[in-house]
Amino acid sequence: MKPLVCSFIVILLILLPTTISHDYSDALTKSILFFEGQRSGYLPREQRMTWRHNSALNDGKNLNVDLFGGYYDAGDNIKFHFPMAFTTTMLAWSAIDFGSYMSPADLRDNLVALRWGSNYLLKTVSQLPNRIFVQVNQHRIISVGRDQRTWTHHGLEAPKPASDLAGEITAALAAASIAFKRFDPRYSKVLLDNALRTFEYADSHRGSYTNNPETKLAVCPFYCSVNGYEDELLWGAAWLRRATGKDSYIKYLVENSQSFGSDSNYFEFGWDNKVGGVNVLVAKEVFEKNVAAIAPYKDTAEKLICSFFLETPGAHMSYSPGGLLYKPGSSQLQNTVALSFLLLTYANYLSKSSQQLHCGSLKIQPNSLRRLAKRQVDYILGDNPMKMSYMIGYGNRYSRQIHHRGASSPSITTHPTPIKCSEGWNIFSSPNPDPNVLVGAVIGGPNIDDKFVGGRTNASETEPTTYINAPFVGLLAYFKANPV
Image 1 (cartoon, rainbow, N blue to C red):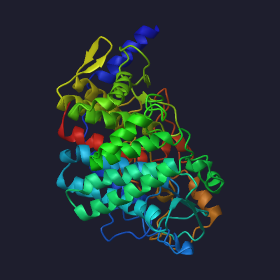
Image 2: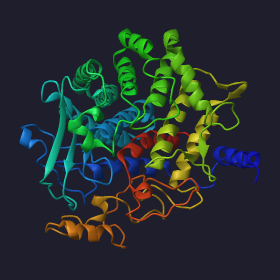
Image 3: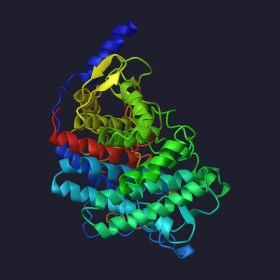
Image 4: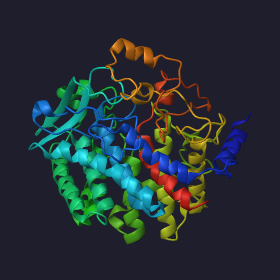
């Protein structure tokens, strides 16, 4: 088939209405519920994911600090604070921009999930002067609800750099302060005060947290800051501007735009690279307040958004034959969901300012952006060549074996005796379905050819992560209330 014909077919696939009707309300509720399955620490009486029990109850005790709580990032039992902070930022952004589309119950549960993350992040930056905790490791195979006994805590003290980690925690706390301002003003102020202090650490001790010998071996290769720390400084400053309204952060964004690379590598957005998100977030001020000094951020945001449309000039995103926005990575759908979130967010900025997207001589209406974002959501929920849902517990056909210790191991309720490592590996390689259903989890997804093999050992396809679900919450909230 000729490339031109291939491109035309892909354009049809990504823009035409999907053929399957989806229950976005059900998917939204389940997407938020998923976070209960990732909780660490003492669980509340209201816990609905009942196979998950208290865990990691000794975190921080050897240092006389409280590091209980927070989220396990993915299928393991490690608390990586860098992706956890990004998760928290995106849960907050979902509440800020799309909370009005949620039912009262879903908004409440989204804020509960957000508070679980923000409460923990406060602990990582506020307990010891000039110290920031990086992650908490576990070193033994466990089953669900068993207290992990052998833990290592990694932290950094000034003047050791951690601009990327501290910058992301700044963004998370600042964004959460906005989300909670109407519902809990006192808590909102605590979040913002700590965001301001954390940004001082990030900006005063510039450098990547993964360049420190104390943390590099623990963090890498899982969450190395490959994209550097500069994007997180811009990201933190952008959220502080939105949270405080202070012009000093506009000045910071203008003065550091070029040197920090706001107009390079902007086709990315995720737990490591925040450049795409920075440009879209800052563009809001240009739309609403016509702040000329930061107009270059909007210009770069438009280049990003234009790249989603194959008929436009310049560089383009890639799509699978079935229409999935595809960027290579260890967790494919994380890229799809995060970028789709930016696409929908930018569409709303355009609509509210009565503008169109300009891509060379082409003018694209905001609804075209929304249809493309919706196509990605529908693909994930089952409108794809495999005819399966990549959200666990949604629809009739989804993976019954995922790369997740909690889901694949028997709960302490049904297996009260300790599970040894050898037994744990037998469970991991078992052909049986997971005994616990991690409802709402969005897993890694298919390959570039829309093929999905699956299996518990196939982490790239079947491992869920908190940072896939967090932006998915906002997408589902919008499409629940706004058919496109």
